[in-house]
Amino acid sequence: MTILAHSNHGAKYLLKYFIVLLSLFSINAHSAPLRIASDIWCPYICENQTGYVVELTRRAFEIQGQAVEFRKLPFKRALIELQRNNIDAVLALTASAIADNKLLSADVILGYNSNDFYTLVDSNESFKQISDLNKTQQAAIVNGYGYGAALDAWFNAHANTYFASGSDPLAMNIIRLVKGRHSVIVDNRNVIEYTASQLNLSKQLRYAGTIGKPVPLYVGFSQQNKAHAITFANGIDILKANGEYQQIINKYKILPELTSGEVRHKNLQKFLPSFN
Image 1 (cartoon, rainbow, N blue to C red):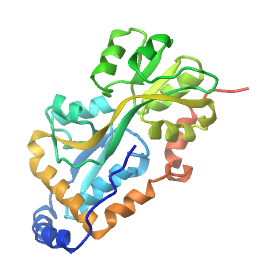
Image 2 (image 1 turned 135 degrees about the vertical axis):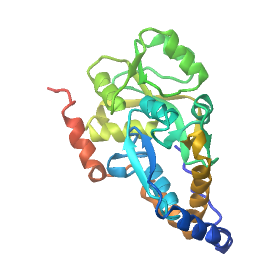
Image 3 (image 1 turned 30 degrees about the vertical axis):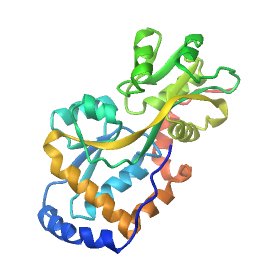
Image 4 (image 1 turned 45 degrees about the vertical axis):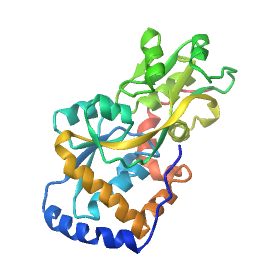
């Protein structure tokens, strides 16, 4: 994952948005909390409303007087609830997911996603192009996620592809991989390594390659929330100007320690297989 940490700090941003800040604060100070949802995808989106995307999003609104309420929902369910206007935004969406679901973005890139492949440590499989998947026994992915048009087509065309769902689908895919149910899992490298560390299974896995180029991630807003999308973009600029943006980014340059995800760690333990 590449994090956009570069910004033009300085008084010009503070001056530009000082008036915006005052006006938005007076408008939003007593408004209802903005409802934002996502599944757990740490270190982007973690338990207890942590993760760098969560923190940046919350502070971008809070600094302008808008309260935010985060909800943990399976990814596909979050998109459905957004279409029904039961929530206002979903975190960490690709441009294609935003277009496919007719959403709005603030054109603010909060990071990049990549399609990274992991196998068991004793495997010699490697994945650099889609045809490499023809040699593997079974790939496991997350239901509702988009992996790019070509990979999506391959997964959907092969009946043995496993589509995980639920509140922690990646954790389940890792555990099923260790149990021998799959031959390879696909997700973002940082997220796989973080989740494996929470499960104490890092030594069981190996990185086996990446297919495709990294794609940017955005916050997706419903069509009714154009004003909030603008507010979000303004908030990110304010955070960059006052240095808080960089402070949050710096917290997540390395994978968080286990102590930052103790609740999730405990929740995952019940799924652990037994090893001799």
